Amino acid sequence: MDFFDEISKEKKDFPKIHSVTKQVRSYPLNFYQILAIGIFITGFFLGIIFGNLFATCKTSAYYQFGTCLVTEFNFALMLSIWFASSILSVLIFSVGHIIALLTEINKKLSKFHV
Image (tube, rainbow, N blue to C red; front, side):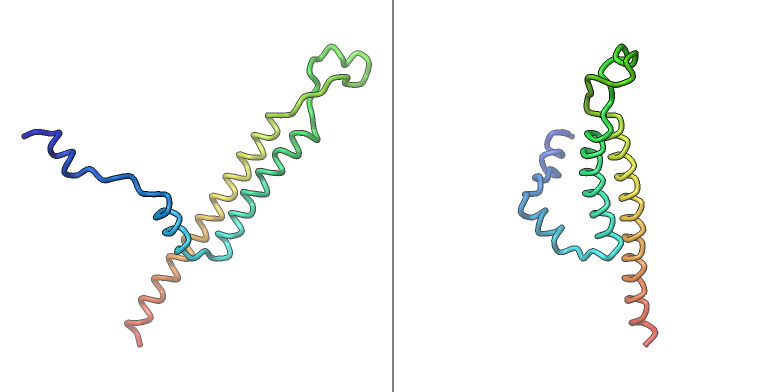
């Protein structure tokens, strides 16, 4: 028994980009899934914007004057907004996927009860 022969028999090529995009476009999205994608994109941009708006001081030595003289981009705030928006969008997308599956099951069951 040669394992390399078995691997070569069962080996599959990687899917092409065109076939993956075609498969994704054929999948219908409901309201919750579209909302989740919108929240994810909005959270991405809000993380960048808020990271710039609420900048942090470079060192604590400038606090003696009462103002911050040198500010830096707030990566911690950006990453926390990205994390929160991605978790929220995954939860909403999963609810939308569950609703889509239940709708499909309902359509298949309604064919039998007619």
